Length: 233
Length: 173
Image (cartoon, rainbow over all chains, first blue to last red; front, side, top):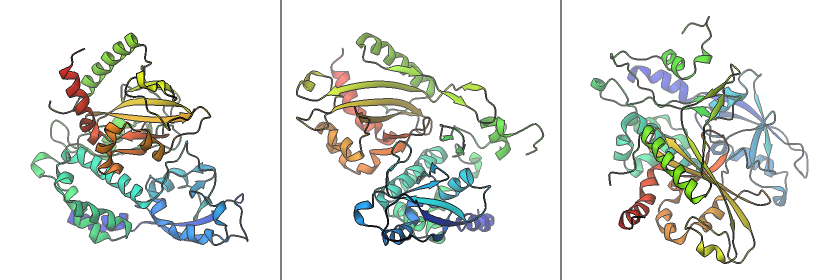
């Protein structure tokens, strides 16, 4: 893992330049200017957009403001997906900055989960961490961690503190080498054009003969249509 | 009782038993095999699992709700709202356990919020859910439909089922 430190930092510090524009049907007291922000790929929309909300609330009356939600080209954006996943799914082929429309009315409750507070984001994040550890370590590592360790993991993400986060996360990324790795690899394959949010199944890191599987092996098994005949992995 | 861990085959056979019972009681559980449309080729693909059972349950509230089974929940006493609950039982391979997803609508199609759900939980269960409520019932995206549902956390399945299972053992039917 030490050799991968550069990769870990690159992943953590990935940013997407974004332009937030208020939906033109919102009722405002004067014209709302667009708001620009660099979004962290590893975080969640509702965790990093307090400034966006404050900016647009300056031109709106309280009675015209309900739960904030985001949309890209007509598609409501699921705040519970990491920002990088949302961008890659919906906008990776478009020109930067990523143009997101902000809404304060008509929350699409058949498409989006509600996000009334940051505790909800924390609970969702920790739930993913726990499920991943159930796959990697039968939940042993995450259950052996103390409540304050879980809190540190969350605070590291919330406050964009790489070292604070990884001090705890490295425990979740360890495995005894004699066992060949994690019990199962936690992965999700997201698809843009499908009702089904993602493909997630059990997948062992090594073959019965003890050879390490690659990403290509995983895709062949879980999503063979992604590998066309002339693609090489 | 060694816990609620089930492998997928065991889950499948338990579902078959549930469906047989449901036929007897005529209370509406059905087996929905999942068809997944692959985006990159247009054939429909039959998935062997995860698996789903669905039940619609209409519930009028005015007073005679007491004779119904314990799953009936009321939104507010004395009101005339009718609620429609939809329950799905899915299998989580991460936790080797069944997971309950549900949602509720009024007849006008308004979906219930989390606070409404909390106030409609039977008082017998409310205390055990109130320790860290955010790890008990939360709003989640349905893993197959992609729509918001409420989910009972699989870590808590055993905790909730234990009193039910104990009672079942004490009173064979």
